[in-house]
Length: 347
Image (cartoon, rainbow, N blue to C red; front, side, top):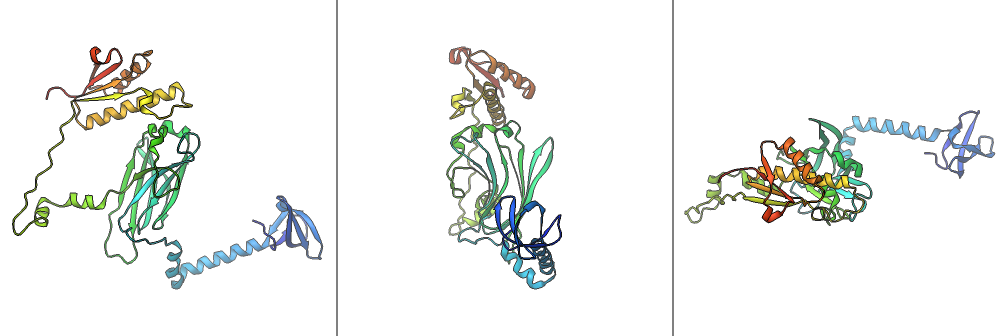
C-alpha cells in the first residue's frame, strides 16, 4: 500500500520522488527529484520504501529463527489472556448468524472458541463422500477464538459432517493431554429455528454453541472403576454399596408431529420443496434416534393433505429403513393422517 512519505520510482519514466499526497484513489501527488510536485497514476509507481520494508522484515524473520533470544520472546506474541478458573479444556464450535432472528437471511460465521488457559492446535475438516476434506488448521491462543469459515442458505442442502482434531498444552506443564477428535452432524432444521441460537458468553449476539470437549470431571468419574469408587466413598471402614442406576425402559411408542408449524418457528420465505426437505430430514433423524433407543413403534403424523408427504415418507422407509414394517396408523386415533413404523415386536 502506498503511503505519504514513501519513496517511489516512475514505472514508465526516468526518475522518481516522494509521495506528498493523493488527489483521488488512483492518482498520487509526487515531489520529483528536481523539486516539482506532479500528479501521477498510482498504478505506474514503484514503491521503493515498501520494498525496503519487506526486505528488512525478511532479514528480521531470519534472525528471529536463528537467534535463541528471539525464540524465547516470539511465543509471547501469540500468548492469550490467562484467566482464573479456566483450567479445564473447554473448546466450542459455534455458529453465529448475521441475524439470529432470521438466520437464513444472511451469512453464518463458524468459529472455534478456546475457553481455556491452554494453547490449542486444531485441524478442521469436512467429512463427505467417505473422506475428510481439510478446510483449515492452525493454533488458537488461550481464551480467544478464530473464524473457521462462513456459510449461507445455499449450503444447507448438503451439509457435511464437521470434524475437529485438537491438541492442547500449557507451557511448563508436567502432564500430557490426549488428543481430542470430534465429529458434528448438524441438522439443517436447526438453522430454520430461532431458538437454536441462544445468548452465550462468547459473542455479543445469539449463537448456536456446540461443545467439542466433554465435561472433564464427568469423564474422570466414568473412568473410575467400582473398586476405586468404593474406596473413595468408604465411611469409617464400612463400604457404602454402590448400585447401578436402573436402566431406562425403552418407550413403547413415540409420536412425531410433522406439521411444519411444529418444526419451525418461522416459515417465511420457504418454498414447498424446502418445507418437504425439512420434514423428511426430521423423519430420518427421528427414525435413527428411535432405533438407537430401542423404541418399539414410531408414528409420524403427517395429516391428510394431498398425500405428498405420506408418499415421500414411504419412499424413505423403503429405501433407507427397508427392514422395518410400516403401515397406516390407527384410524381411531389419527384418522388417515399418520404412518406407523414397527421397529420391535413383542416385549
